[in-house]
Length: 271
View 1 (cartoon, rainbow, N blue to C red):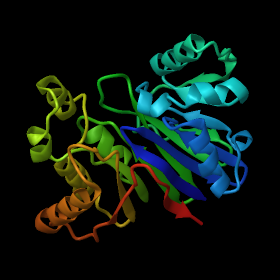
View 2 (view 1 turned 120 degrees about the horizontal axis):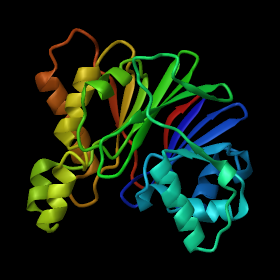
View 3 (view 1 turned 135 degrees about the vertical axis):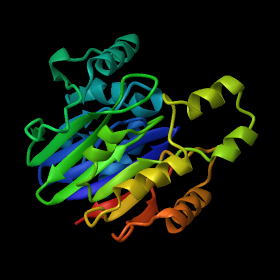
View 4 (view 1 turned 90 degrees about the vertical axis):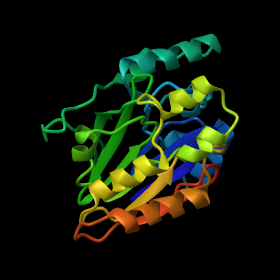
């Protein structure tokens, strides 16, 4: 199984889940050229991609999709508002798309274990996020391996935590440092949006989630969607590790904390 991040930042997000002949992208907010380069590194082409799972409609998650659909017939999976946005983006660029390739899903009730879907050998759960537009995050299950991508979340709740208790490998948003964002030159409305419940998770929020999820199943967490202006990769991982060391009182081992690189490939699983 391969679980690889091609990019994770406000400049573009894209990850690959791959097993045998099943190849799934989660978001595609990077250029078609960059995506092709990433796939080629792992012996894949665009024609190998079965579908693109989209978390939400913001450009750093969908901007590469119209150019892909111009030449390729790939299923696009998301909620109705996100699919409409992608369709409109394609139409605005004069790109004709087959509407039958747009597959609508709704967030599942995680208390019902029969609510998963299948793509090849991989089961997936679309789960309800908390952002300023309709958003999803996804959990993928292959045998005993469970991976999840949770990005662009302004807040977390018990639903989110319960959905992730069986995860082994987690990409988790760690967007901003609270003091850095207050000190930077963003306009007040933007700071309020980012720090609000429809915005993004802070370093502290991220550390709290990891602490609450710590169990014998969670092996590795990859801090993702790190801000260019209100955080650094080095500070984010230092803050999260320090917070966990100072505050975790549980008996389980804490997971290893890593970084999903902003603009480069990050191998999470390649086995």
